[in-house]
Length: 156
Image (cartoon, rainbow, N blue to C red; front, side, top):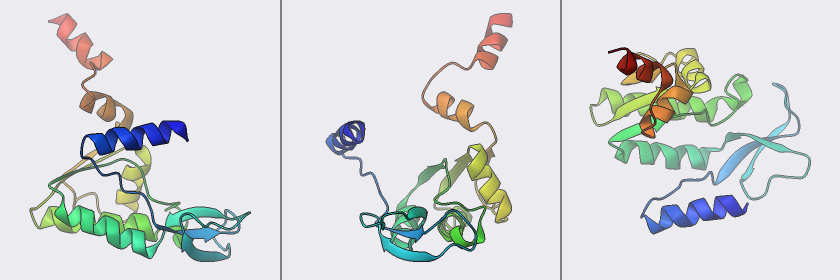
């Protein structure tokens, strides 16, 4: 928890807002037919688990997407593999695709689960770029030298 507080403080100091879910779809068990309820992200009942973001969060995140110019998507919002918990990931993907198609957003999707989600929902052709090397993509964006790229440079 202390690390999270430090990250939040560092972001705030740089004028960066970290968006956290305000509500979630909670389930009494990890199953497609689980009992569910939408609750505050701060009030998940004991014995229950948050398996997707709720409608308030989806609306808030979609508004962020509409205002963004560049977006890196790495990781689904819920257990999209189960229909009961796919709504957050699907609707965020739709918002990203719509903004990309409108020409107002450059969207980069990376990482195995994110790539699987955009493919499952038929969105892979509607975003700017899909990277199947999520970990390597993130390292490259961090400015790290990738071993495979370094090998090419060393061979020259």
